[in-house]
Length: 437
Image 1 (cartoon, rainbow, N blue to C red):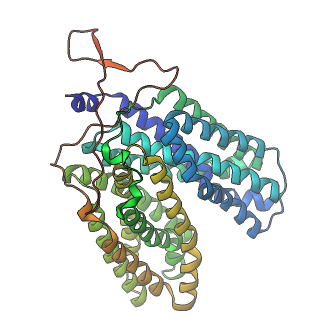
Image 2: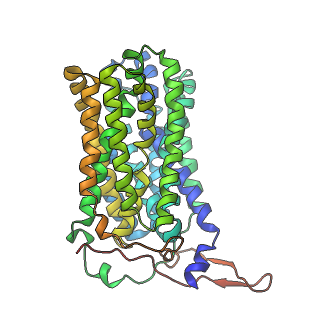
Image 3: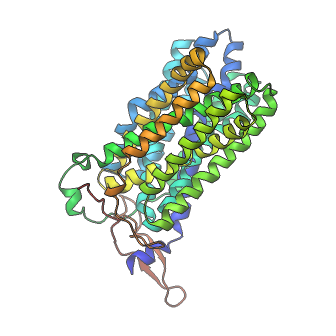
């Protein structure tokens, strides 16, 4: 069958790897600029000014994500992804020769806006290339790109900045440009079948399903960023740990978080749905955050184990949410829906640290962790589990397909017939979004 043949196409893994590397390059500068703060301060900038510069790429993301998603829906993933990343690299190259807070801030803002293409396009590629029964694992792999990108920035930027801020920016520019070239060479847009009757009928936002997934995902960002922001200072200030020792422990927790994302994606593929696992994981986050709050209040050693567990569990539903959004949005709206998803999550992520810092200042860590535990409980009520049709375990619909773009040769793959024979892939559409009733 066409779906089975598409599932056997090994090119999908090459496309996934190229998309992941592109996203790693984008995330390295979008979320890794805080590692340049010491170098910026050596240039005479205040801590406040350096912090504003480090936040500028995120601000660029917020204003561009939906537009990039619409572009991917209209023109395809390959050139939108490659073009945005190349634009970010070019702007970062210009930034190596720029001085002054205003000029650098503008460069970082524009680079962040241009690099926003990786968030909408790379997720949309997964919807197109992977069948439903393996899409959760693929999206989980894709979601590991952000922590990997931040890890690359942590390892490379302080060392290269020792030779000057320009050297660090030149590395990030080259990384983005190399990612753009890789995408242009290795990625092909999946073939697209005709729009389904549901998709032809208009926007998927006419029903509350996508809005509820976006809302639940935004609620789950609060415990994730509460723990990510304050875990280190909690261990140092409240438990008397050495900062380096605490950093090593939390770095291992980040590795555990990446594994948890993969595990949750694999689990969702096995059970044939994203939203029920997402609700179960939300409950686990609430329990762990509650244990962390109790440990922080009582000064118990259980707080140390809980903060590590919270660092792992709180990041695990990210891939589930993105996969659910893409599948429920459908072929024609996936890029825009993923752009809205990213925008909502980044907005909440930006607001969480100052909010929780104020809570810690007035009520202590226990109050902040207890408040964080309330958000996944709210998410459990918002997740629209009934809107998702359950598939049989191990089965799934074929990936989305679309004719190759201008200048692309027809895609072929080895057939099951005699050696050397090839056949062209036949079209088959993806799982149709199920509307709420």
